[in-house]
Image 1 (cartoon, rainbow, N blue to C red):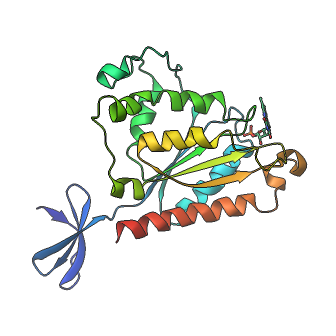
Image 2: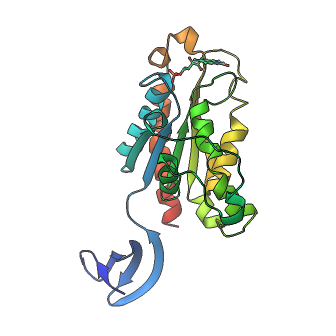
Image 3: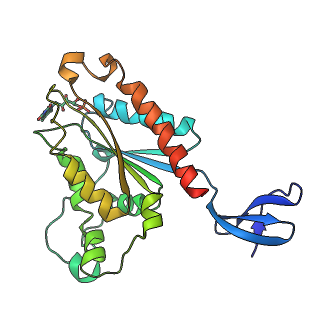
Length: 237
Ligand SMILES: Cc1cc2nc3c(=O)[nH]c(=O)nc-3n(C[C@H](O)[C@H](O)[C@H](O)COP(=O)(O)O)c2cc1C
């Protein structure tokens, strides 16, 4: 096994070529301990309103994750070129989508990250059309899992891959996010993520926007920090 890394004394952690971490004592490798590269966090904004309440809340979360040492990336669906699912069911036959656009790349990217933050404001008691389009385009992954049975995420994978839903809503109604949760849950499940937490703030009308909220941005930052530490802890078990 080829390794890279700096030797300090007889005991060290070193990286294999594939990025796995092994603990080595002297010349003998004694245990595989998982990947010691930075936790990767992908935030996807499904708000068509650039730099509005939802994208700002997502950014606070990503800032927290970055502060905790994660590699962070933000994608704004509005800036992508894509079409919605055509419902042709071709993916049920071979697990592939007939469409080729930015969503194919984004969906493949999702499978490579440790933490996925899906952000959408509440529109008409649910998520936006932008985010729903992405979720519908994940049907090939659903087909691979449940029709073709070529895709499987084991327990350890799901435990170490965390999904969070980030949302804002105008109304003060406590249940205003309820329509969104099952959709987001289905997507996290299809893509191999544990639905870990929500970062949600209602009453945007009352507060005059997210910047007027007394705690939401600080809470989002703290949750960004926390999820990175949780994933690191799981990796080091
Ligand atoms: C088309 C549309 C539909 C909306 N529907 C709801 C709704 O059903 N319930 C609610 O509480 N707020 C609703 N809102 C308000 C937004 O959820 C709220 O203003 C949110 O913070 C906007 O986030 P943004 O700045 O990222 O767009 C709606 C806003 C728009 C534009």
